[in-house]
Length: 83
Image 1: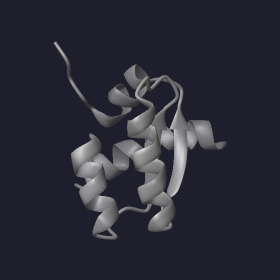
Image 2: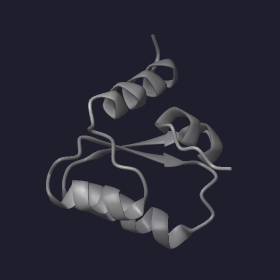
Image 3: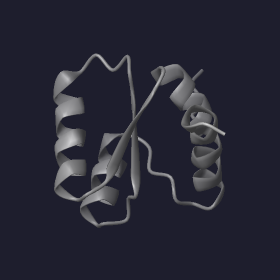
């Protein structure tokens, strides 16, 4: 299994066990409290300041950063329902 096939499974399992932080605020809190082991960013994120902040936090706290193909797909993996 490659990383692109494993990533959705890891995200779904994290959500099922209550270990998934979604959004900038939740992610920043989890990273700063040393509760984060992995951070997933969407490739199509159009806010460079958001990306810079998350990457800097991850670098400071030794958290791995992976990229998802799009925000829509990442939202589906994380179980975000938008109407």
